[in-house]
Image 1 (cartoon, rainbow, N blue to C red):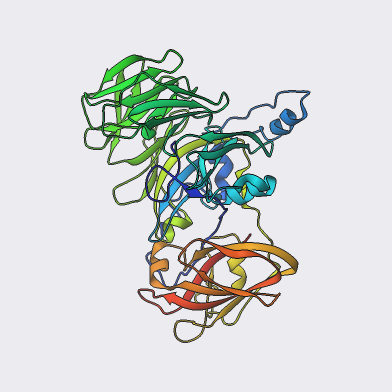
Image 2: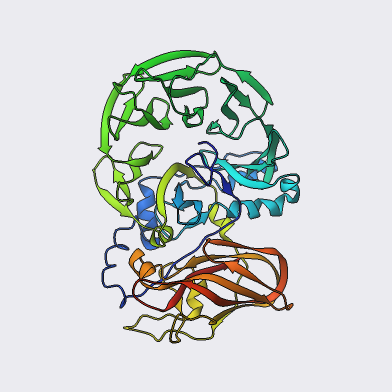
Length: 493
């Protein structure tokens, strides 16, 4: 995976956490049935669904305390998928457990999580972002980009040990990244280089780029010993890194080739022939078509399940053994983001630990929409962890001036809020009702500030010590059908 970018498919993400949830309105949306039923799984069925894709592994005995600490978490592997979401105002990245649509972790949240462990990580940096996640999910690449520096400050953080393993300067911001986060492939003045972070070594490779694509889309083998890329003659080219030479060319009969994922020693998937996705066995050169019009497909490490976005921007999971296709759904899709899978991560890492936030003891509202057909819109649903419930104000008009108050029960230091805006039970309910456009946040110390609610994450200008946050609706984005202004979930960090 290359770096994450807010403006392209080579990704940059600013780092702070957002895990949120959405809401419900049964009466207003008679057409939403089936969206929930088509999701990949429910919490109650999670164990059954994970059984097909996970393995139990035993922790190795070790006298080393840090290794034992890491092994404590290695009891069960779970499947997570890294997604990219493109909205009207921002690009986001998040990981989601394959068997549970509510277990998503906003990648930006990783930054604040790591800053707690390493306060000097942003010294000298202007833009901080997550540059990559290791294939086993145990490590994350954190980067600081400064316009005053020719290189990028980077560090590899171990999620299980809660410590920085390596700090280094990366020569370039656009790169292909090895699964273990140690090797970085990039272009410089027309030449191709490999940077090894552990050795702090930059090597010029005996390669000439012969297609229109950046080397940032080239793929490393799972063990990081080889690379695969396409040339302008319709070949998939395999390159041995240690020996610095091309070891094989496989002609696939197309010059428009996109290598998607090298997921096993002898297998990779690529797209060619007008968007047909193929499974390639490298040794035998056997090609097997998997389907057409699959945007950004990713495959499970065992090669059994494919997740992709179709041309209508729906996300599907395809069992390659049974050919059973399941539509996937989550809160970000329901609030209008176009969502694409990026990486499949099979890991024992407790990603949900990043979700931890400042607990809210009590939520009150200046008004609430009356219950309709046993559907409630009460304020306490803003912090219930369910993306299909939410609060709607209950006054005539658009609800300008209506308030929500989040009480902590004690003075806490807060940095911002994450908001799932609108009534996010479905895309239909989201569009039908008003969404908040801007908010005023007031604190118990008497201070306040204005927040733009067009983004999921809203950072305060500085940390505030307060016993409550009072949110006042200042502006709204009009719904297609109703004048009720709604919010689905609020998380305080």
